[in-house]
Structures are given as structure tokens and as C-alpha cells.
Length: 253
Figure 1 (cartoon, rainbow, N blue to C red):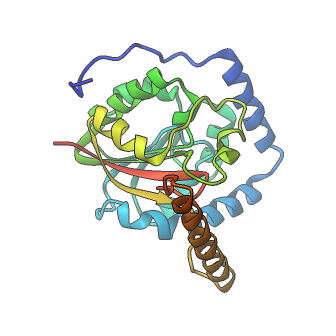
Figure 2: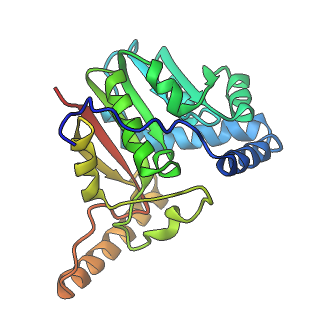
Figure 3: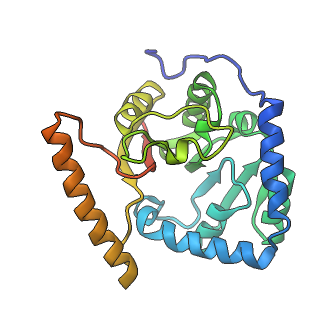
């Protein structure tokens, strides 16, 4: 694929099997209650901050989109940071309703369709979605994301990766997951869809509390031993050490 504007097959339809699973997952959230969801959003916002804050726009008026947004955890995180133009799109009406009840700007829409209507987006979040669609649909989606971004706009994407010693943990924790690749392959995917991969961020512990500092130390020791094992056995050293990773991509000129 040489032209980043190349047309890819129209694969916006989501299978009935996948929709059934999404709805079942969303319906379970209704029994949790708003207070528990807010508590979970706050916990996740604290988790996101040390990993993602440095990649966010400097202007609080930047146009930021989250597709799909689920029940609004990324929207909540960004709103807490003071961003004023943040919108999420989600196909599951139960998740949209939960996000709206928390005063988050979530709109019901098919992610594969709504991306075609967006323009001048400064930062585009895509969390735990790309692995749910076919490879053809994923490439088409990424091409459309690129077209929706402003010059030097960024895509922040999270997905399972196969580098990790526990590579199948997140790949197989959802019935609707369809594929995953290692972090090195994401360089190729980024280039093929008109992006420049500027950072790969795995989910190792961050030393923000005493417990997490101890966990980070244990992680570092385990990584040291596993790296030595890989080199002794002439195996590639993982580029991402956790079952999922974040890929920060910038739109190519």
C-alpha cells in the first residue's frame, strides 16, 4: 500500500455475534451503579495520567475524540484535566446512557461509520477497539482516522500485543477479539496508514505509591531475568513487556 489515501474495502458492518456480546457486557454495567462507575473512572484517570499526560495537547481547547468511548473513562480523565472539547462515540446505548448520566459528552454511533464524518481532530483516542474488527476493517479505520486528524494530529491507541511473556492474557480475555501483533509490527501498520509511530508505552507499574514502587522494582528484576533468558536462547527481546500496550502515532506530513 503506497498511497495513504488509498480506498480500502467498506467494512462498517458489525456482526450480530459481536453486537450480542457487546450488549451483554453493557447490560452488566447497569447493575453496578453510578457511584461505582465514578470510582472506577477516578482510579483509571490516576492510572492514565503518568502514562499519557505528556502526549496530550497543550491547549485545553483542543478537539479530542474517543472512539469508541464505552462508559466514558477516557472522557472523564480528559474532563478532569480541564479539556473543554471532548466527545466520545459508542455503539452500545447502555454505555452511552451511563456516560451521559455522569455529564460526559457521549453519542451513540457506529465507530466505523462516525469516523468518516469527523474533521480537524487534534487527538483521537482508540482504546481496546482495533482488535475487535477484521484486519481489513482495521486498516480502513486507521486510514479514516488519519483523514479526520488536523496536521500533526495524534492517535493514541491501546491494544493487546504479542511481545509480552504473558502475550495471550489480553488477546483471549474477550470473545470478540480477532487478532493481535507485536509492537514492532505496529511500526509497519503506522507507516502503511499514514502515521509516524512516536512512542510505544507498555503498562509496567509506575512508582507513584510505595506499593507501586515495590511492584515496579519486582517488574524490573523479572524483566532483567527474562531479557537474559531471551539472549541466551537467541530469542528477540520484547519491545513491550505487558499484555497490552499504547501506541502514540502522529499524522505524517
